[in-house]
Every structure is written in structure tokens, then in C-alpha cells.
Length: 328
Ligand code: OXD
Image (cartoon, rainbow, N blue to C red; front, side, top):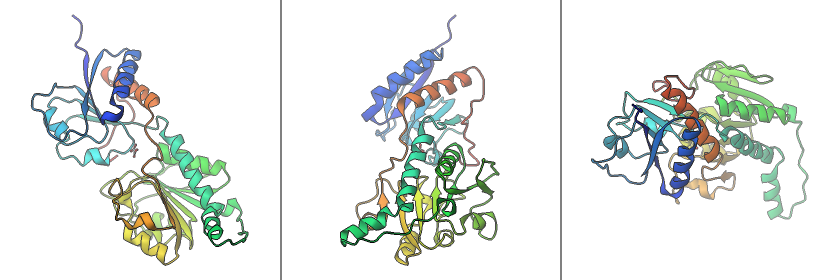
């Protein structure tokens, strides 16, 4: 007798659901997984008690209602690298395995975004923009890149790619992660983000640019506060492409006002979209982008989902498994 096809529910916004549904179905076929894939709108906040039941839910920012209506999920797959929003849902089924995307084209995109932001601040483009408004012809001193210190906070697949890219472009790079990492040519520190007297304080000290790509966990929410940012070099720049909730907004604004920080490039915010009345919008020292540093790419993501599902369906343990206790 033929086994029942895997029942796969895609929970995404309507805008690109049809493309995702067909890409996933095709990628699963390509991996030899017999599956039926259907779509549920992530914008639908009401649970449907008569919903068709799935074995696997592939999701991006699903409503809590999804887990009220799905009662036999064995696997939930997050179509992104960060799982904080998913883990925050109180009714996420405790017994289901959780997987997330790893890289799938995102690491290269993020490295490109960060490199552009670092070069922009290193080459003084913000200052030249201000000078242009004053019709001021004032060449600025260009520092040696080998002394220009960039710190990468979070050294997973994405942070590692960012650190390597910056190093290849000649910058002096330091990295920090929760557990010890070894990366060629990069001064790596490890420990707790509250340990100002220890490894975290040493990592932050005198950085010209701090790049954060940390996953958001209960332990590191608000970690980029006055104490942390105050340790950077005078005139330093913050790049946040991790999660907005790491930054204490009022502390960042105060340090910009005091001139301790010269600027910030922010792609992520505690509330998204950033509310119209938020002071970040009108600060000339802040360059703000709408969470676009690395958008999930359909082709590589669908292939990775299918490969991991195929491994899981055969009883394997694919990489990208989320550790709920750790929070990523
Ligand atoms: C992600 C994101 O987590 O886009 O993948 O923020």
C-alpha cells in the first residue's frame, strides 16, 4: 500500500503565497518526497475549527490562531533565520520539532548590506553629505583600514560570513558569540552579553563600528544599552541587522545627541513597521531601512526546506534544528 503523502501547510502572506506554494511543491518532488502542499493566509487572525490538518507547517510570522487550528503538527519550519516571533507564541505545539532556514542566500545578502554600511561610515559619506549641504569643501582624513576596528556581535552562519567579508576588505575584525568560535584572522571573544567586566566588555572596547546580528533571546533583549554602546570608541557607528529589541532606543538617541556615537544604520526595530511618530525617522545621523538587509530568497529557501524535510522524513536530524531552551 502506498504511504499517505506528507500533508504540508504553508502559512504566509498572500502577496507571494502562490509562488512559494509551487516552488515548495516542486522542490519536495525533486527530493523524492510525496507531499500535498496547501496555503493558509498568515493575515487571517481567526482560527478555523474545521481546518484541514497538516503534518508540517512552513511558516513566516504566523498568527497564534494557526496553532489553535492545527492539532497534529509534527514539524514547524520557519522561513527565516530568526525564530523569536515564533517562540513567543504561547500555543506553539510543545511536541513539534522546530527547524529554521540557515543561510539560504541570506548570509551573502547580509554581508553585502553590512559592508556597504561600514564603507559608508569609513569613507565619511555621511559627513560629506552634511558638508555638501553647507557647500563646504573639506577633505577628511582617511584612516588606515587595518586600524579601523569593526566588531561583529553574533557569529553564527550569518555573522561568520559578515566577519569574513569585512576582513577580506581589509578591516580589523573582532567577533563575539555565546560559545567560543574560531574564525581565521578574526579575534573571537565568547561569553555573556551582560559581562561588561569580562569578555563582552573586552569585545566592545574601542570598536569603531559595532554590527549586531544576534538572534533575539530572553537573555539578550535590551543588551545594546547605554552601558554597552558607551564602551565603543568615541564617534563610533552602530549597525543593527539582528533584531530591534536588542537596542534600547532612548539610550541610542542619547548617545547620538551626546556625540559619543556618530551614527547608526538600522534595519530592524522593536515595532515593525516603525511607527510614524518614532524619533528615529527624523534623526539625520540614522539611516533607516525597512527590514530588507536579507530577504528570504525563494529558490534557495524552497530547496533547503525540501532537503531538510526529506532528511527528516527519512528519520534523520537535519541541521537548523531550533533549541527552544536556548532560543535560536
Ligand atoms: C529572518 C529575518 O529572521 O528576515 O530571516 O529577519
